[in-house]
Amino acid sequence: MKSVWYASGLTALALGLLGVVLPLLPTVPFILLAAFCFAKCSPRMQAWLENHATFGPMIHDWREKGAISRPAKRLATVSIAIVFAISLALGVATWVLAIQAIALLCVLVFIWTRPSA
Image (cartoon, rainbow, N blue to C red; front, top):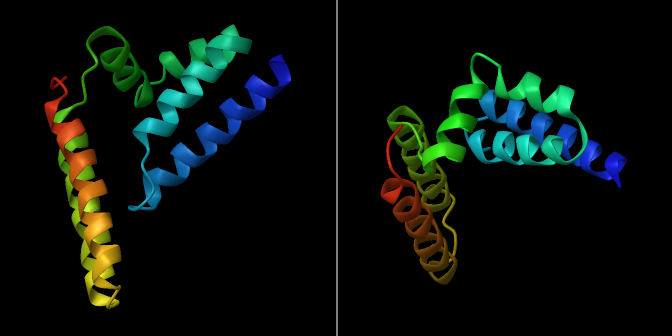
């Protein structure tokens, strides 16, 4: 079972790292998932991720306070707006836009109701 957790952690970490350069792929949720997976199987990888200069603080803020930093909230909001604008520009069907708008609004409400780190 440890190998499944380890593989899941590496996959989540890879997706999180891709999210750093791809604006439509979220970084923070994948890094948090990687930390969770590594906690189940690899104390060494867990410690590395939690002590990482960039990713460590966001993991600590989430675990301790359920908090998301203001810059991360702003970046998520801009990314969501870009995704919706692309859908509009592509002429996606109205019913799909409505579903997308509701889903994205729910995500924004969740993000902005979390405490700020």
